[in-house]
Image 1: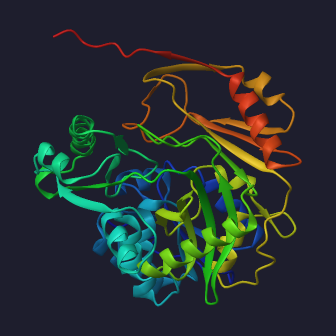
Image 2: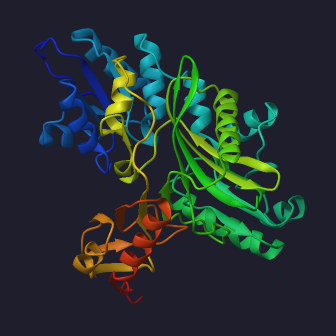
Length: 424
């Protein structure tokens, strides 16, 4: 599918192509950053051609059809070259890598982008490079779950190869729980249109410990850590819904250095070498363990708590890197910041969220964004793929930011009506 404009008049400014889905949270932040850099932005949307024409979108793409989309981008580039192609979401990272390679623009190799999207390939490459990571086994959905249960150790974690945001990730402590977890994940994958015969899943050892996230920027001289986020809520299962992130990390400096080293080794193992990374790690008495690494920055609206240099947002920093503009200090500023991804407490139809004004009045809360509209069906993990919204805080230290987030969340009340089932 293609939708290339007949004529694009040159402006003399740098031209940036942003690859995104219509549902992305981050479009506004990237557009604002590009405007501040006086850069022309072209939107490449994962959207059917008919809708793209109705919405006035310059480039309609099918992120699942890489070959056709790369051809579309080559045609657009021939009319007027792009200076950079940047993926906004996970779903665009492979297309961005293929397109940048085809156009001779700097980015991660396509093989690395693929490895960062496929947890099975990621695990295999990290294990081969000696990066601390869980023991894993890959199984076809056609494998009898009872046979899988006999081959793994407990506790373990069942997960899909490509879903993001902890969707479909389930802990099992026994063979019976493993069989139930595989069946549940199978329903999720089949409901998404995957075929049983061609779909694999991963079962890996559960790694105990605290969990952190790292955002970094890969440049020619290696990995630059932009932020390490603590996750103060335990993530021990049976599902792994993330809630609070705070930064800067309260872990010892030596531990933070080990986290950065592990993330850098993981990036090198799968071939990531240019642009942002977002890594998830567990830390216990044996040190840091790599859970996952992605060739993108932190998702959702979480990036809004980060500032660099003279108040520069993360998106502007990433665009400066992609466009090969001068970069200021990569050190984040601020004494304490946090974000809470508001979990969906139960499935049903969201009628309303009450108490937002009271929550916004909590000291150190800087904003609340309810991103799901009323009368929308909401589904919690492991089947769900979104949060109700975000709470943001800034304080004199990360502990105070965490306290504010918990206090604000405690003032919110969620009116979720059960779904009505049709009688048969």
